[in-house]
Image (cartoon, rainbow, N blue to C red; front, side, top):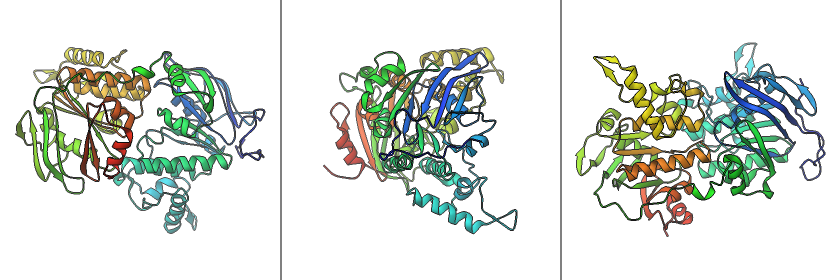
Length: 515
């Protein structure tokens, strides 16, 4: 097996243009049934560079990554390592060649602890097959510390970790293999600002050491922060490769979607505040250890953004307003009337919907098809038997509203991230909710799908829904919200008008700094 150990490099640490690529894909084609996922991909990666790959959901990024890591064989085309053809019969072959991947959808084993995940299949042993637990935890701690990850206990069970900490464990596992070619698929999707900066520091260190990083992200600001070159995919084809310093956000968006979208990402705000009273209110609600004394109100026709750093309590507030988590004090009111929400079923009965942060775990049944997912909240039936015709009709209406087309019998796990999010939204629209709560509504989806979801939320608000959403992306909060509420360490710290708020003022409030 050819490996990716770096050759001698220039004094700058960056390869010259004539250097043989460390890894190259030529004419890669891949078909799944009647769908052509890749249509002759040609792309090369140099030693000591961060090479971003961007494109809409369904553009072919994940399929390309899967081929480069040995998950799928290409139907046609060649993979070359330092100019020599190679084939991967399995992910193990790719790993032995020095390729590792950190995927957007985590692949950790929740029942195991952190150390067992980080060193999976590479556990230290003594006297043959006996696991050396002391060495296991010491080695894991050394790996975490080398990456600047000091807050995670190697003995902690993965199921007890936050999504952000699981992402860091996934990163530690990939980098523990001493890989020379690292694929990172949306690695910052669940990371707080400090953890994102730590990741960028790790990337810079990998580049200095001569490793190659294939960096997939929908956040173009990250591409301009860290990448040396960027390749744009669209409809399974390479549209262009650019040196990052010689391109712009607008050009990349235009290449990704085939049209100029940059100035039409967010829909216009309401011309005036809605006249109606609050649709949903929280009056001094508290949940010990999560949030304290939170009071807020969202009116029908209004979109309110809930900003704050990861761990500020945003998700917990949304879950409490839905009935998924109990409150220890305070009161929740709907259209002026106090309500008791003891479970999500109570929330649904009151016309409340919650689009959860982790769509694949909390919002969707991945092995079921679109119709089955969309009708899961309120199953159409007749005399106790599922009414297939009504189910399909309900799903058709809801998916048309979110602009999802195609066969409704497709399995949800086979859809792109953006289309999965549309299914999750369609599920709630099928019951016509009056209150719509969204947690990271555009996490891990492409810019065109984001624009569609923003437009949908605005249409729902214009039709009379009260919309409250939490987001870690400040441009999203600033661009979409009519009003912005900011949380810090479980408490509301500020409120801003969405049309006049600045990134600086929101960040200061999210960090607990008074203006």
